[in-house]
Length: 444
Image (tube, rainbow, N blue to C red; front, side):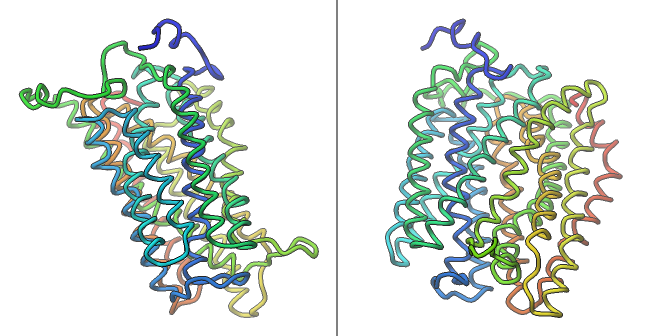
């Protein structure tokens, strides 16, 4: 075990030093995930720049939605497995190894390797994704005012990987060969594993008591003989977390159009030239992460600066879904222009959409991660983080289902459906802010 006073005393940008280790771990994991995701839909249907598998849009969207759903759905057993048996640190490391193997499998031509690789990435992400976020929460005391800001910085690492990966993997995949792009995603995950192991000594929890985040193996038999009852306040807070998790599902159903219908809109309906240079349509996947990188420090500073005036988690969620609805309202006219003229539209339409979605994401996603760690009883923190990712799973599946409409309906109808759904959700959640805050019992 590392010396506690030595490791807990180190700081990184005013936060526990362990945040840097987790920042770069998640950065490389998201590099691998979003690098592959930027190519996935285009590889299945074929892009304007290179033929792919030749699947129809509807089938491709269903595969995309099912895959992305299972990626996050596996966070529930992944969180439970870490809580009860192997610990969060080991779950993240094993998950990263499986993810890397999945990407390298997709680097081999052939449908069996393609689907086997998707399966490995699903299993590996289920272990890694919820548990790395849970470890972030253990670095802070429950009442530490830096917690939300810390998750915002952690979220910037996610988006740094998401920004770089389409530029690298997307270019390699669309300009050279799809499988070279998939291999590059695997290399990124290997980099993440190396630095994660090197920074293990800094992952000491704020409370010096043994927790699932630091135990290598939990005594499952001892836990099986205990039957702790949650307090009434615990149940109320769990209820608040579940309500907000439900609304996050609606957010992700719209937000994850980025990898499906918006990817096809970029490839088929948007100008892909800068001067005489034709760039890969997958590069649009880097726009929103770039905005996140630029504005994450601003949001992290803002939440701390506001102090007692900082919006509550339910209000931040409402703001997040509102900005999402506005992004789709913005893109509907562009879709109409393309349909009426058959001319590709300016890329600034998508840039504006991704800017609004960035505002929504920063109001909801890092706040949601922090909210789960604050409202969950410690003994089920990993499981509750898995439930949070369940909302992302179902949202991703709905995103794929909606994107499948592109096969028979114009872009404008799909985008209008996304606008109406998210706008209604905004109004409903706004009406529920006060009741949810009462359930939270003083947790902001």
